[in-house]
Image 1 (cartoon, rainbow, N blue to C red):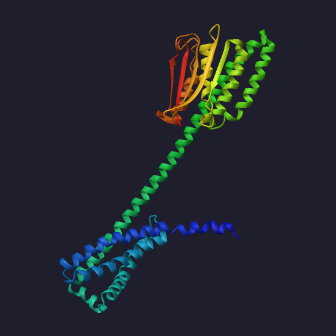
Image 2: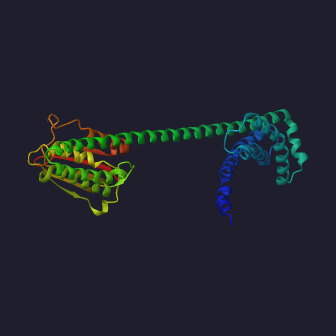
Image 3: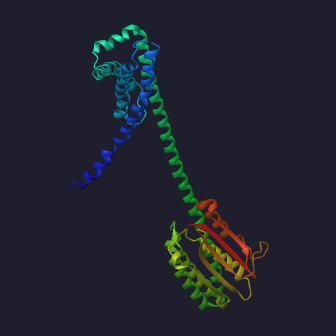
Length: 363
């Protein structure tokens, strides 16, 4: 069995459907013109006193006209804008054909000899043909302009799609840049402390180096991914805090609380680390007796709330350890780029002392 052929059959069968739908709509719209023509013939040109007879003739000729012109356009060029010269030739050929075949169909429907129907226009032949050409031109112009409008809409939609794709690419590049800035920020701090430990405590420096290698191996794939799970983020923070605990010893204690139902929740990677690093560097490490750090995740009002709390020195922009807050600035930029106003990062004093960083994300 040729599966490739059978797979394409539904697509081939579905392809004419938009054209048939458009043709049916055009035929229905043409009937409005047909009614108008019957009214003009009956009450203005007075070629025939029977409105019903004039309506049948008008419907037959108008339907033939739209079948030749609009049906031919859809058959040859689809819903795209047709070339001007071939379309003009189609229009010229359709005029006499629609007239002859429309009269023949009306003759059959009304049971009136064809000669009698054709003799009606002799009462005002010039007016009849002028009206016929004018109506045909009006119908053609109407569908031509609508085709142009549809073409412009299609081009606008394509341009909008291209702009959206370009915007997504620019956004992705921005996120990768901001994410890349976080990693050296963490590494510089850790390596600086490792350098200091080598001289005073080589054994502890070796343990710290081992923990750093283990942490980097764990983060190698996640830090380059576009998305991680909350469980992966908490596992990375546990590895990172283990590394920091080697450096700070008993001065650092921590706890991570992640409800099991939130472990598979997708989140952007490396969002928590700048908050944890900031809490240690600016809150706990400068404090003589160190302190405790808690990381919590919970679902609140249909959103995700991540909290990093320390009982360190507190938030002071003028403190010597305040730093440049590069990590926090990057987190805010990433949240803005990914979620706009739906996400936020706030710092507030903790009780009795310390800082609490609260990150709110849409689920």
